[in-house]
Image 1 (tube, rainbow, N blue to C red):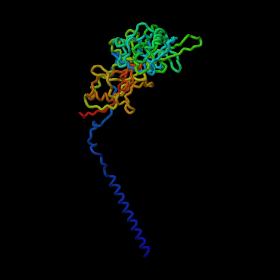
Image 2 (cartoon, helix red, strand yellow):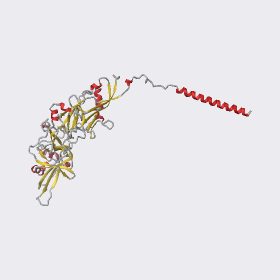
Image 3 (cartoon, rainbow, N blue to C red):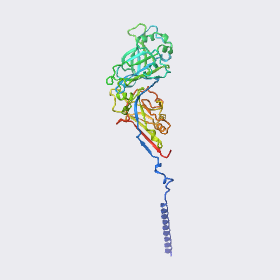
Image 4 (cartoon, one colour):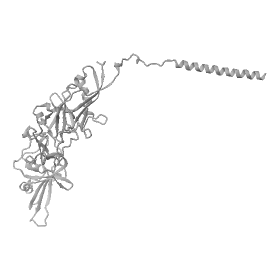
Length: 474
């Protein structure tokens, strides 16, 4: 009886297990056969509606070199001085107009009634920034101004445009000397001997030393020039354009004098009149005519009207020398068929490695260049992307020594051209700091560079447009 009951119980348990397994298998089959939701609308969305990023380099870049009409000289402490005979750009002469002052607003200066001048020297501090060969000896002339440098006046750098804008000066120099760089303390300087008659008049006329206003009314300042250096050539005596710091503690006019009778053991006293001060005025003058000063024919041809030579090379020169006109003529038609969203508009210019100057001179490519847009009158205006020059959105303009190139991203400006918000008058490529706070200046960079032209087989500029089309967005 017990054996029968045990047999029945085991049979019941086994039967239940089989039923449970069968139900489990049915559930697996049911859910495995159920279709997934295919997603709303994807089975009917046309493939042409997909947003695809496209890249093109088909937009033509046109360029050629042009001369500046004008460039302003600003009244800051750094000014260029010197003469340079460049193998490709020709001769450039840069002079300085500057006044000088009684230091620290001192009044009633007296050197003593028995003061006698020993010598007078002008010191100009060299910043070690230059183009050309700074070891070249140059011929320096210093002229006494007969009209003042007016700090409130906006001066241009070019004498060829309006020579009457510059302060007038006496034609007889108070210094005519050959000089080269030397050291003074911890600085490189140019030392120029000043005429003793001029300096003695300062020493012995205390009525002009009562205050700085009276002093500067009597002594207007100086024009410093190297234009009379007539022995330069592009190989052995190139000369140099050098950056001078007029506010440096060494720069100034030094009066060496003694009081009483001269004694063998007596040392001269010294008094320094600085170029710096509250009423300081200084401006640069540039004389540059590549058509008559030995510039390369590819440059002179473009400046004479043969713009086709810009297909080979373009020439950029600081201090308001030359710049390049850049055009993207087919850009606007690129958006005629549909709207376009620009992701990046990269414009890249390459240094022409076949036109490198002699190794004994410093003609390194400028560390910075800039693009500026052109308005309907041919004037320079900001590129829109210059307003967003940050780490995340970089307008560009820094020289890349690995690529030997300058790269600009002008996506916002190009977008406005394609949308019809801005006209397409082109751009100027210039030697300037691309930061919008400084890009208007041309007097603070003397470097120059030669770039490949639009059809240069090795160094032609490239325009690369990355964009998205909206073919159904009319």
